[in-house]
Image 1 (cartoon, rainbow, N blue to C red):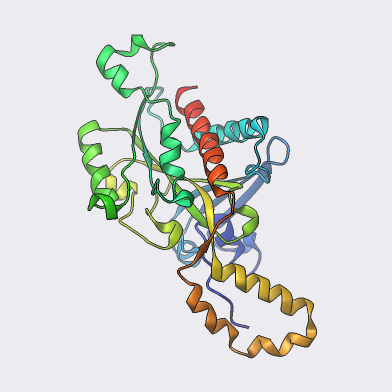
Image 2 (spheres, one colour; image 1 turned 90 degrees about the horizontal axis):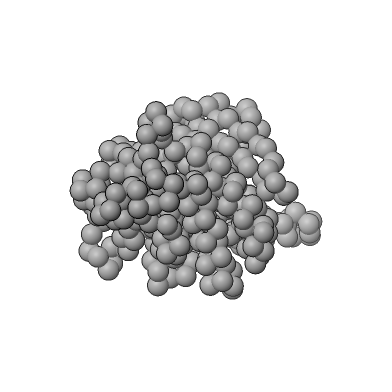
Length: 302
């Protein structure tokens, strides 16, 4: 049976979708290790151009933090997820021989669309200090020397009339940060990873990729500074859900085996622009955004 086109922004899911064992895919290394409790961390390294083409992802490192109950209101659990995010993020952040860095945090997405509001909500809870350091010097902050953190919520092109990349380039030209950290909502392949997974990568990001609306890339090549991307899947492609459900039905009911070659998958084209999210996404996106912002605050300021 012809399969649906897999729609995912997670490198881990892309590697799972490659035929054969993950460890045997040339140019792809997958390392998995557990953290506190049931939090699972997986690192996918795409090392060759052929592997990048096969997975549909740029070359680089992708760290996936899977926390099965991250969507639940458990403050202690979310604190552990934030600590895990902080540890993994620190491994990817560029360093300059102990020198304190200047970071620009970009909250991508549309605040008016709940499932796409992760980036703006994360910005709301960040500890921003660049203006204080510029005005009063580093001595005004407790602990003295520290990283400079600024942020921007560029909005969407329908409201601004500008590409996000154009806005960010202008800000970088004026403020000269050492690194850009972009936050955005993603699309997942599996419902089990919806709102329960955080992906960190050093390859940059394409705004709007979560719903297939690709804009100009935010990468080191386009912006001139290293770009770290952090994303949480908030939507799942509707065609993927239908396809998975139908495959399961056919595999469990042999009497329906003849439907496998009935051309039913052709109907899925009508679902290409439909994305699904949870009914309690309003609460989840606020909860998860706070978890991400707490991890960022710990990573950048201690």
